[in-house]
Length: 242
Image 1: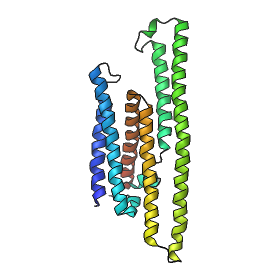
Image 2 (image 1 turned 30 degrees about the vertical axis):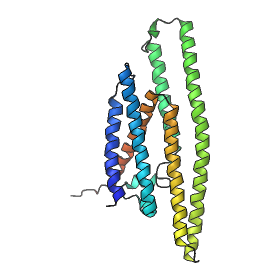
Image 3 (image 1 turned 180 degrees about the vertical axis):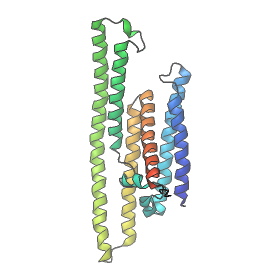
Image 4 (image 1 turned 120 degrees about the vertical axis):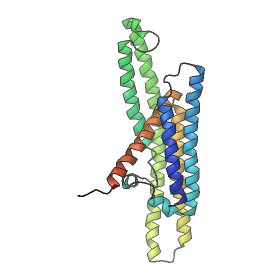
C-alpha cells in the first residue's frame, strides 16, 4: 500500500467526522457562540481539503502514474475522474441542485408563516415585497455563480486540451527518442493545474456563500463523495456464490 493510499484512508475518515459535525451543528445559529462554531467548522473543513491537495501534490511529484491509477479508489470513482480527480464544474451542478431545493423549501416556509420574524402576520402586499426581495437576492447569487462557472469552464477546457496534447505526444515515445523524463514533467504540471483549479473553485464557492450556505454546500459535496465511494465499493465487492 502506497503512502498516499494510507494517507487517503485517514483523510477520508477525518472528512466523515467533520461532515458529521457540520450536519449536527445548530442551523440557523442563534447565538454568537454558535455562529463562531459554524465558522470554525467551515474553516477546519477547507483546511482539511487544502491538506489533501498539499499531500497529493507531493505524491504526484514522486509517482504521477500511481496517482492516475488511484488504487485507493473504487472502479466507479476512477471512472468518474477527470485528470486524477473530480471535475471542477461539478461544484456548480451541485450548487444549482441544492439552491433549487433550498429555494422551494424556503418559499413553502414563507407560505406557512414558518420563517423567523413572524411573517405569518404579513399582509398580502408585504408578502409580495418580501418574496420579491428574496428572489432578487437569489438571482444575484445565481448570477455570480454563473459568472464563476464560465471562468471555470474555460480553465477546465484549457487543461483538458493540455492533457490531450500530452497524450498525442506520448504516442511518439514508441517511434522516436523523445525525452521520457520531460514527458513525465509535463504530465505532472497538468495534474498540478487540475488540482489547483479544483481547490480554487471550492474555495471561491465557499467564500461566495454565507456561512450557513457554505455548511450546507460542504455537507452536500461530501455526501456525494461518500455515496459514490460506497456504491463503488459495493460494485467491486466479489459476489458470494453458493
